Length: 325
Length: 245
Image (cartoon, one colour):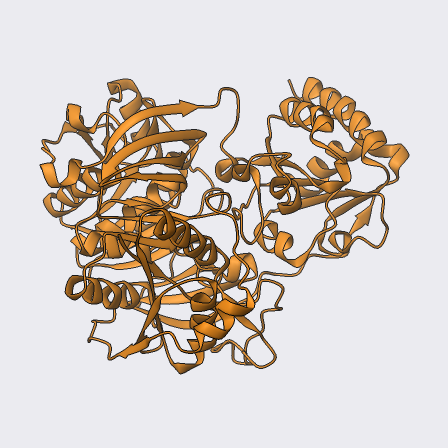
């Protein structure tokens, strides 16, 4: 019996969420007194694979079939299932990333397992197996008991800290040949926007709303984000107006995020917006309206015009970063 | 082209979420239930596709009789008929099994869903339905173009996008930007009352997860205002007090 963790790579490099997921899985494996097996799919170098052992993966299964070079949820789910069966996996853990959310439910069905999505903390494992997951778009949590049998869990990015836990790397090539049934989707083109940080995984997020008056004023938002090493986000009215892409919209009908620091500039703080960002660890609100509801949901507030405050913040961020180095 | 749209009835996005004192149940008193916003986009897309492809749109919901108001709304927007599987939506596996069972007996060429429901946010039902039917699923589709039996889909991926091609049947999920919202007109609302709504008994499904209770995020302490003249200190204050950057 083992605990199995799927670790996602991006062009051969493990994502930060991969190390969070391994750290989380290692804690479960320790508690259950089972070995931790990591599964990697695609072309990943031996050096990169060995990194998984820094966080507690005793065994790393490398599935490098050429038909799996491009991420594809159907054959990936079959490959993870094959690995879970070979290792007698009792708990299978994935990141609740775009890819993880597309794979985890398939693995659960294939393994006839229970599934808990968007889990935010370690399970309670005293006889029963109880997890806490996000629900009502960030307004609440659901506490779920997972019944006996195999369990599949996807964990929210940024909810579990990376913990170093060095073990000797043992990398094993795992043979898996996808079937034709799993290969009916052809990837035509993968386009990555350069120099941008994936919003769901970002530790720092700079977000702006209608208070910015127009898309032409986003330069300062992007600059502040760049200096801080943050991702950019926006409110719903901004993406609806086409000022920013929908992929940047955080909130109830956009994406829910839980960064360490969320800076909201010129966003009033409608309940639908708060829902998507309320699990941020620290929230800073900059608004010129003292009645903006967002101030009530913030840790720090700055009352003032974004066009005056943001340039000052950029300078502050530069000094802060310079002192850090 | 026969299109199925999976819909759910969820609390209004502006609703305050409250639970009974023991946190075991959601308090629905005073809460308006709406068609899940993502499902509404999926439905709008389905109606557009049906119009251009000489198709029909069926909506399916797993729920008790209280969800019929939302089903009628979907019929008013433009679905031709509706199916309600007569059982509370216990969990994502239960719902997915009901839908997949219905589809295995009544095939569709395309299944559209919302990317997630705004109450449980699992994004699991569409993927499970596709897995049970052995079909692809595009959970984070941004754009969907169908040409005869083949389709081109633009999907969101970590830090970018991917363009893929496949052929029908498959499951695709909608989020903002995939279609324009459709507002039901008076004719739609009137005709919705008489459109067919079939009620189907559920199949038995093994329970693998059980909701025990709910919890609310811890409330934040009072906001600390920082003078607009002193913003240069902001990041040092956050480091000092919160140790997160």
